[in-house]
Amino acid sequence: MQKNIVITGCSSGIGLIAANDLLRRGYRILAACRKPEDVQRMNALGFTGIQLDLNDSISVERAAGEIIALCDNRLDGLFNNGGYGVYGPLASISRQQLEQQFATNLFGTHQLTTLLLPALRTSGDARIINTSSVLGLISTPGRGAYAASKYALEAWTDALRMELHGSGIRVSLIEPGPISTRFTDNVSQAERDKPVKNPGIAARFTLPPEAILPRLRHALESKHPRLRYPVTLVAHAMTILRRLLPGWILDRILRGK
Image: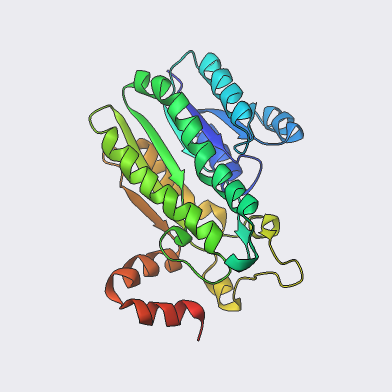
């Protein structure tokens, strides 16, 4: 029987790379995108396009209902990959901007996942995989809002994993470091005249989005999926350094001075 998997944030980057790879591996891809034109493009590529705006609770509810109907209430995987970043000093970020950051990166993911849980339970061996970030492990100046949303996603994922223990649903996190996608181009800058940019050294450790594929396949198909999958040297290094270094030393490194 062909397995159904939902992928959010499917229009480009990690989501699109994952969709193409899993389609070749025989999955039926329910490809969720925010823009109607991207939904049409997903259909043309051989996926089943779903319109979904994670920042809109009505859109999430509508998309979940459509997904359940399309998969006949049996869903094998949910790859919560959709999201974006708000960058800028925290003092420059309004409450509304912070609410939108969390609405997309956490609240929409929470709503969609809980609505799809009955269909995931029906599978008997389903997987939920959430895209976090190295900024779910550490925070840096100018990226506090985005990091806060990913820290929250990490905690939410840990709780969900434990709550679903014994249900037949496994929950994992993918934690990318620098990945060459359009994410940075789509960042919402709180101070347009002083945009937050990635340090030049980050380019040395940047990997293409295909780097996540071995981790995603393992999380979906292994009998023993890992709790966390760091991707890139930066993510692996920060996983270790945050445990070993005193906070003040890590602060100095992350401040860049």
